Image 1 (cartoon, helix red, strand yellow):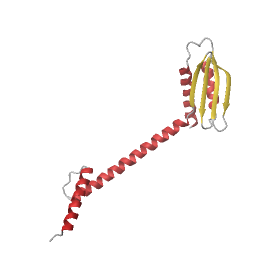
Image 2 (spheres, rainbow, N blue to C red):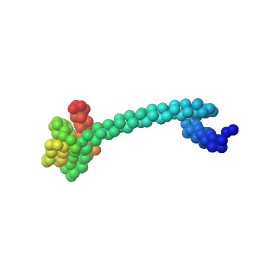
Image 3 (cartoon, one colour):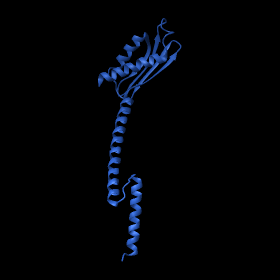
Length: 157
């Protein structure tokens, strides 16, 4: 004769297997197959977690790389532009590249403050030539300097 306690344990095990079956989307009927499906489901979840961790790592690396690029802001002034370039790290050679871009744009550096010791900070007042005044805007200057930074970054990698 089967004891009442044994019946209760058997029913509890059956209930738990049914819960496991529903969680793992198993269509198995017998206990062994339900457990095997659950094991396969866990393996799939582990693979998904590994893939997501790789994607997160790649995204973090990309974000970290982008954060390493200097930030650029450009404001339009009455006669020219105020350009700010800031990076939390030292950027050897960047100042020369930016000044070359100023020259290409026809901007004359009227005043500049630069710090390149442990970080990079450039604040420059660029006056534009009278001929190009109507054609140049802050967005164009920012785009040109951003492209210069991108090219500089690729050249040092």
